[in-house]
Length: 111
Length: 112
Image (cartoon, rainbow over all chains, first blue to last red):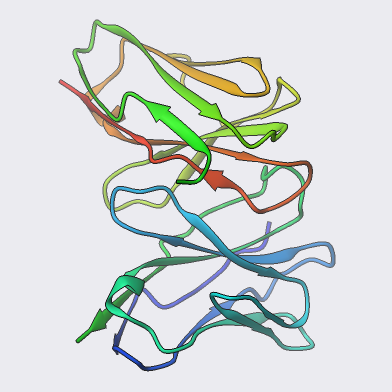
């Protein structure tokens, strides 16, 4: 089970690009990298998932280097509503048995 | 609105009470999950159901009893809980072997 390490907290200002990096040195061949967002008193929300290189959707981009030992979630032009906790998870796609949520990164977007 | 609903949203119960949490998903998914999130702690996976069969039980005390009568409904039966069981209980669902889970809003449980 790959362990992930990410910063506990980050601050940013509205309109800036935010990059949150996650380390997963023991990632296995079959593991995918998944990011979730959670607002206070709500359930987490899936943001993006990738295996290698770069993945982009309407919300974020995910950059994964060739060795896959880390990944970076990039949020373009953040707003106050992006203030939340962001979780990086690593595991196989097998009904989530290996899904272990760490403490996540608490992003605070300031005006 | 994620397509996963949970009731009740808030619950206060004594240690000798018996109560149930309900989760319903309207997404046609075939896997459902219960998570526990205590204050200032990460989410903990409690139970996983796939095609109505339990596939994971992460050493959860027997005072928590899950039930999955069909692929759309999931229950968590609670009895003789402890104050340390107070937490946000989250239900999620997914389709097949995917890490994209859809979470409900949670039930905020307080055990007195």
